[in-house]
Structure formats: C-alpha cells, structure tokens
Image (cartoon, rainbow, N blue to C red; front, side, top):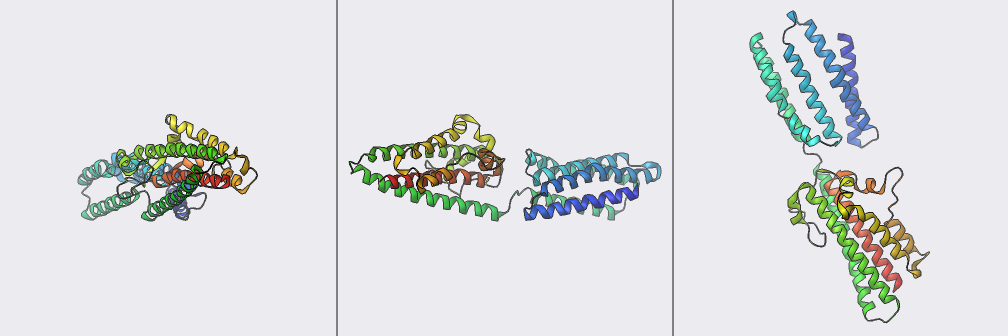
Amino acid sequence: MKRVSYIIGIVSCLLIFIGSMFKVQHWPGAAILLVAGILTFILIFLPVALIHHYNTTAEKKNFWLHVVTFLTGLVVFASALFKILHWPGAGFMLLFSIPFPFIVFLPVFIYTSRKNNTSIREYSYILMLLLFYALTASLLSLNVSKNVIDEGILSLRQCSNIEQNSILSSQVILAEAKTSDKPMSAEIKKFHASSEMLSSSLTKMIKVIATSVNSNNELAIDSDGKIDFSIIHSLDVIVSGEQLFYTGREGSDLKNKINEYKNLLLSAGSIRNTPTAELIQKLLDTSGKGELSWEAANFGRFHLVWLLNSMANLKCNIRICEAETLEALL
C-alpha cells in the first residue's frame, strides 16, 4: 500500500502542477486537469496514505486525528478548487475553509500531541504549515489581479468615449433635421427616439447588475449609465449575468428590444444593401457564437467589471448604429 500511495501522490501532484500551469497560461484543458488532480489527491491519495499510516502506527493510536486530517484536507482543497474555477458557492466555501484547520484540526492535534508527548519541533512545523495555508487562502480570496481590473476599467472608459462621440454625431444630424423639411426628417427623429429608449433600458440593466453585487453601487452610476470608478465596489466579484439577464421584465425583454431596434433601422429603404446595413447586422447580432447562446457569450459568468463592459459595449454599438443610420439618411 505504501508504494501505491506514493504513485497516486505523484500522479495527483503532477496533474495539479500541470493544471495550474495551464490555468496561468489560459490554455484549454486546465479545468479538467485541476479537477482530476485535486479529486485524486483528496479522494484517493489522502485516504490511502492516512489508512496506511494508521495501520502501521504502534497500537493504532490517534484515530480521530487521522479522521480530522482527512476532513481538513477535503475542506481546504475542495474550497480551493471551487475558487480557482469560479464555481457557485466558492466564496462561502473559502470563508468556511480558512478557519477550519484552526478551530477543528489544531485542537485535535494539540490534544493528541499532549498524550503522545510530541516535541516542540513538530508543533512548529504544524503552526508554520497552518500559517502558510492562511496566507495562501487570503491571496486566493483576492479573485483577480489588479491588472485585469485596470484593463476592464480602461475598456469601459473607451466604450464610454466612443458612445459619447456617436451621440454628438447624432445630435448634429438631429439639429440639421429640425431645420429641414425633407421627408426623412420624421424618420430620423423616430430612429433617435428608439435609440434613447433602448439605451435607457440598458442603463437600467447596468444598475441591476451592479447593485446585485453591492447595493452601494447605485450611487456610482448616473442616469446616463456612466460609472464613477472611484466609488464603485466589488469589480472583481464573479457574477452570473446570464441568470440576471432573465431576472425581471427588463432583462427578459432586452433581446427582443434589440432585435426590434435592428429591424427598425434596417427598414430604412435608403440603407438596404449598403455597408451601413452590414454594420448594423454585425453590431446588433443576437444569434450567438457557435454552441454558445448570445446571452451566454455576452453575459455568462464574468467578473463584474467585464460584465459591465458587455453592457457598455452593447450601448456603444447601439449609438454607433444610430449615428451611421442617421448620417446615411441625411
């Protein structure tokens, strides 16, 4: 059994190491390797190693210490797996697992060590191991690096700038349409009104998503959907936007509104079979990508900063389509 435990331990460690390397490089297959490695370690290696150690111990002492050691390993590694792969409940599991070794394993270890006259050296090893675990778990709880947050914020600001430029272009065309008696003036005003309504719906969705993570985020988003990054909270939290997308009337109707808006723009006779029509079809496409639905591709499980990016990018696309359509009509 000793040889078997060595082989299983080496295999599980290799799987975890390779899976971690794949995860860092964002290569495909990382999740499979990590799941296989960690499950092999906690469900096969730990029980085999602990059973072997218990059976080879004189008088088979410290039964409960072996049981608690297995439970501690199970809780610690399972929570780490959930956190690394961003599975639902990961935050709660990590919160539960951080104090678990200190309030469950350590008291049992101290009690059994006093009965067995364990040396101070073994105490020191255990305490250093627990300290190392606490520090590692704290770093793991950070979720995402500062660079990822900064890139998300930069992308959001770029979307906002493009959106504002498109709005200014549309306003110039609207000003010209007000002083013109051309037939397309009424059509231009109708398209602009539709853009305003859809943009307002998206702003509401942005607030719903942001406040679902932290209620104080409502103060960071103004009536136009602009985000004050100095006061917004929890940009690194993983959010399932696809679930939020179907929560409430606004979310469930958004896709239909986008399709209706796209068809309205394409109904303008003067832009049919033109590059403007192709641009509208591309920017407002809701057909999905491959096996992923449009909702999953744009509003799946992302960090809040990137989920807000998807919404802001959609608003930006709507304003671009509006500006291009109005320019083509004028």
